[in-house]
Length: 202
Image 1 (tube, rainbow, N blue to C red):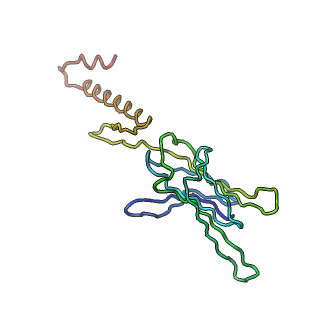
Image 2: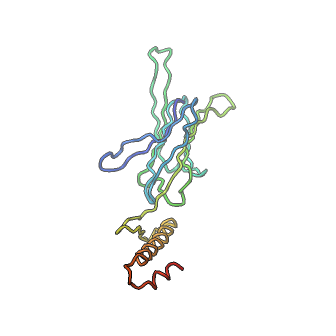
Image 3: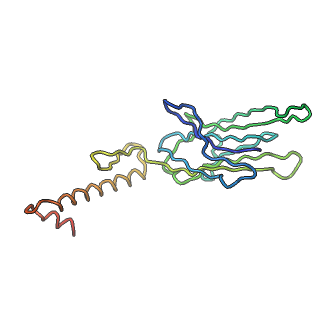
């Protein structure tokens, strides 16, 4: 196998279907096998895994936090011949695990901090050794679904599917609002009532 990589597929009006390399590795370079991906709660994790090279084709498995999620991806195998001379030609295989836009992996706040990993193994025929295995991964950062800024004060709207991280954001937003109001009372002009300010300091 020549290379294993994870690709981010962009879905928007400008670059729909365009792919961006997130992380890759080769048999002689294992250091760059872990990357980062930021995704919003409820959105599809639009990541494809590509195993380039290997004969026979590599076996590709995807895991999230150690749990097998391969069934959430489709599989396609491309084969081609390499080499100019007939006697030197070799079969080149490429296995692609594509995300499912509808029924695929959808981010939740429970996935925050977990690693999405792709493992590819090229079997060795006639040998007990399972063969060469490469691994690449992405550490997921899952953002809250509804977060907005109004009048300079951070607020979060509750929805029917609101996550625990969004609930924490609401509490923090309320505390910042109370502190903001207390600070404004403390900076009232001279001669104004100071009882609320004194109460805020205690």
